[in-house]
Length: 220
Image (cartoon, rainbow, N blue to C red; front, side, top):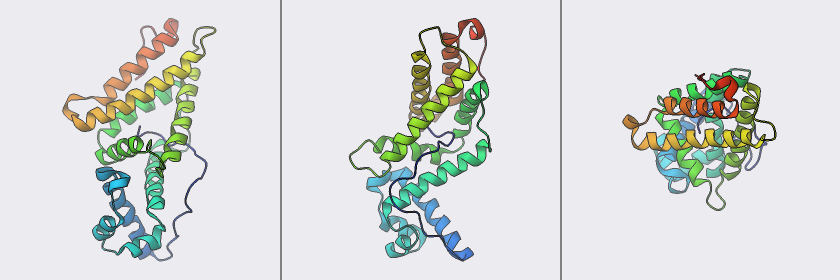
């Protein structure tokens, strides 16, 4: 799910080189933009450094000068995606119902950024394969995202006594619905309203968790 950023421990390859000149910094950003588009279209395994280098007007060695390895280029693309979401979210995470509304708004915003949605859908699915360089990224991201959504649900309502597990299950369901909607939307955008479907699921789950408070209310 392409939504708010989740803090993760630093793992895997070293950081990219830090360019000193404005021209070099711009070239590094150009590489990231081309790599993002290429990984989204082909996946990590089918995208080649040669293709990325050719599209950006460099040799493979030139790309590796900035990113050292194809795996580091991939993680740098994912970090850039997160950075953009952080900028949109603002300095403070919304709480409770505000965070759940943020998820609905994210689904609405995702309908205007097909490339980012495709990148996430392709790489998250591909990351389950053995030794994929983005596997830790997505494992950590889902772990953090589940915690964020579950916390927001707890802040918004109280599950029935003795059924605290419902909150965790509801968080998993919201994430699963948003991710599944993205795949359906990529295949048939005219048939899928991601924001409306996300709002329906969030509203229904709130009513299940706290029917006294949310039985007749909406989350959006």
